[in-house]
Image 1 (cartoon, rainbow, N blue to C red):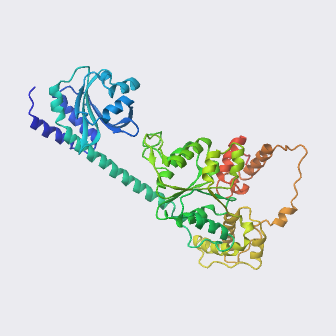
Image 2 (image 1 turned 45 degrees about the vertical axis):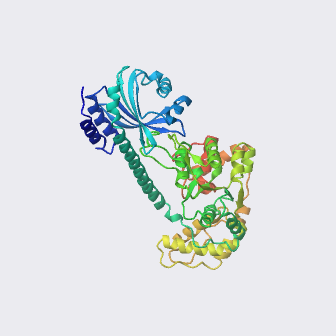
Image 3 (image 1 turned 180 degrees about the vertical axis):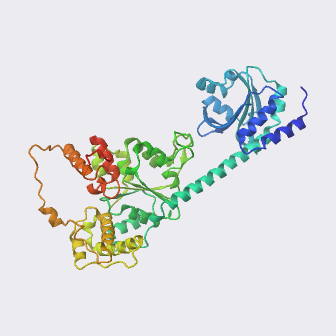
Length: 514
């Protein structure tokens, strides 16, 4: 059939460039080509040299058009063929099992065995973008006349593909910016105060160490009991570093369900699992250029520890469902209230990961060892909590209250002090703040004697299990939040859940007879 090449070029170009959705353009062009030559399907592949794969990103038949993310593996022979600088821009593949690129794909996937194809290798200014494959069922379907006509479309398809890839990039950046904006809005309340209470007194040594390590990119491990203010110190190190204009992303490793930890830390691709309706960047990718703060790092499950080690070693991540390694530039600050060395000795934490995190450890003293900071902390919390509770005139402390606060041992540290001040403000009703009914003094605690029943188990796990069950019964099964079992036991919520799972303790309201 004699075809006017100029008319063919104009018609095909209009169809190719007529839609921003490349798969729709493929389908419309395919239907037009089908009237001139054998044509049953169209595929657009991107060649990833780093991973030695072809990735199909769009596919069309006369009946349907769809975006795809299908990985087609290449062997060494196929990769060498595509890297050849003398590779023709267009070619016929009437016998796919004889083609160095098609053959390994067919052997591994079982697809395209009985097809003939024509291939255009798309490129602009010498840069290879990918390849376009027109296929028809059966062997020996294409001739040199077909290829000559099909080759005319190299330039419009290359321009359309280049624009399409840039359009994808712009939309991805737009999604990233919207995602970051939402993420930062949720964390505005975590801003660092102008001056850290205690940096000239009880936290003086800690702050001196923080200032020494802040300009470096070395990992920092913050150690100390729950509630001592490890996130405040992490904020300070980030603020004093050259990364201060970049993100600081905080993640509580103990609060993430094990099934979601990969997605939360490393992100996921759209469609990588049920419910993954959009691409999501994980905490590591969000922190790129800045700092990631891994609180309760001891709570990471074993498999997550392995992946974390790879991040520290290679400075790269891979999203769940993804095929590409993503380079990241981050500073890691980790924190825990547990003894990581004991956990390493007991096989609960990887020694190689601990060695990499334990480059510059900083131990934050508990509040009972820096009671000189209590007056300033009380003043800060009264002003802060009064504002949050919309109390126009913050009340004063009742006589003797400061002495009482200084004699208490504060097992919950600064966090407990903050909660005690908030509760006192709620109960004050305009009167001076008193804490006699809130704090159980150490003297009272010493008067409480523990009498063990001779029939009571003495095995540690049994004792711990019984105590946790008693506390759960008291709070009607509530684990997290104010008045929950974790708060009463003075441990992290994730730690309690992990321990309950280990001891076989059920959770949920109504399971404890109340």
